[in-house]
Image (cartoon, rainbow, N blue to C red; front, side, top):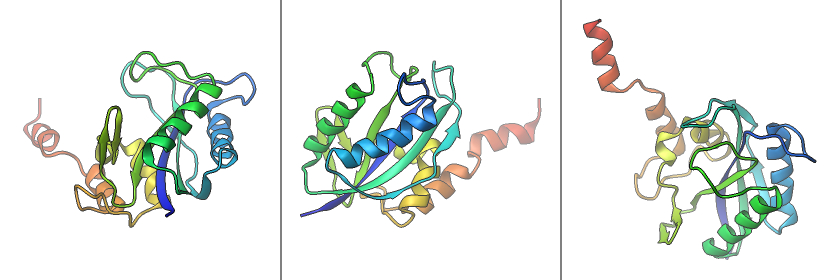
Length: 170
């Protein structure tokens, strides 16, 4: 049975063959299709600021793919594509040629080893929500019971603590 799987793509390092990060992301989308995943829909590629120790801006996108593979097999396929692009596991949030993450897969909730679906930090990351809302605005997070559109609206709101501190002044 085919499932629609939402995949985040990100790059902030130039690749020797594919060039700058936006082209790396575009080439990775082609690699998903070449690996047998049916690419159903793709967001625009967005430039986003880095989180953590990374120093370079990212190119981020989301692809919706259809597959009958089990989620662990999809994860293994994504990791092979990352390695093919020169990804080396290392510092968390560091600069990288390519990062592929499974964000969600229908109503599936999966926790096994390093695979967690839906992605545990999906709801707090604008660099994921902004492209995701263009691909699957009505997808409902199976644990939070909110659509991507609703999650993004929440992420756009200033948090209550920062609003209160701004009201008090220096």
